Image (tube, rainbow, N blue to C red; front, side, top):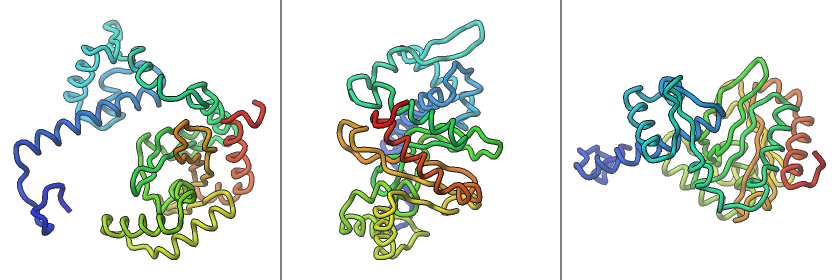
Length: 270
């Protein structure tokens, strides 16, 4: 359905105010994506690199980067024409957490897991009916599936989603399945089957999705301890890669995922 509708599913022309709102929201999201881009590459970058990396027109990218520079969020090096986030960005979330995320234990655990497996490593959190990839370390092996930070998957139809939903009551899961069926046109899932699959996730301690999103690719996910986030929100850690490789290494990868989860809260020595 169109973002702008007359209530019967028929598109209508957006008003000037709603158009302005959509433009502002788009600009705000792009600013956040810029910081996520720098988080992924971990170095300075030119406007062209940011433009290509985020698939945004270079003219729009240059305007956005200059605005962020003028407001103290980015530094600009005129010698090589590159941008880099300033300490202002670092300080934005410094007050939010005093646990494993803030002190670096989670990142250290993710780096260990990346070195051990060479596969893409993902941390996910649930937002509504979606599992959002809030942190991604790209694969180091020969066969790589690039997974952009900020990607999202249906919670009821993904490994990370099933892990995140496994902390909920079955009645809540059924409600999320019904909402997904209602909001996503090409998805119609049986709540009982989904609940059965998530119950199996609780029993096994992990979830394995096989080609659900990308043919030939898969993902294995386990829950992170509640102590990871000071608010106690559910988080999942996931390995994604070529499906045949994940199937062959399933037991070993599950053990490494569980070990990384323990390392993140200091239960396993580095």
